Image 1 (cartoon, rainbow, N blue to C red):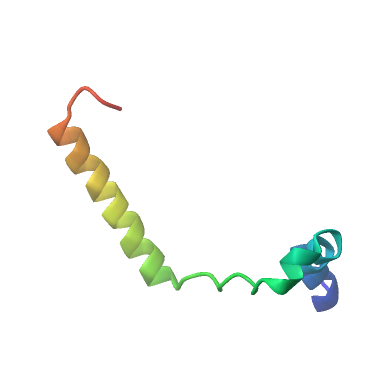
Image 2: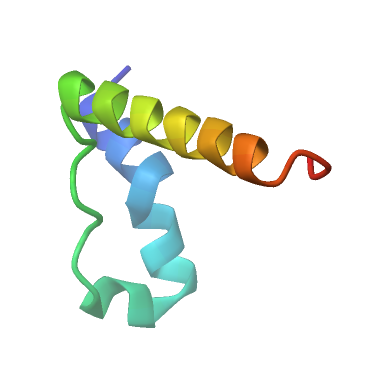
Length: 58
């Protein structure tokens, strides 16, 4: 895809429709894969602990 078209799809068109978005900073880039994997494992572990502590809730 053309980089200009991709930027328009991701942010530029929204800025044209909603000018206040242009004043806000662009979203931060996606976190690295190891960080996302670690956080996913932490969430899964927390769910497991919660299910063990409160067996009737799903």
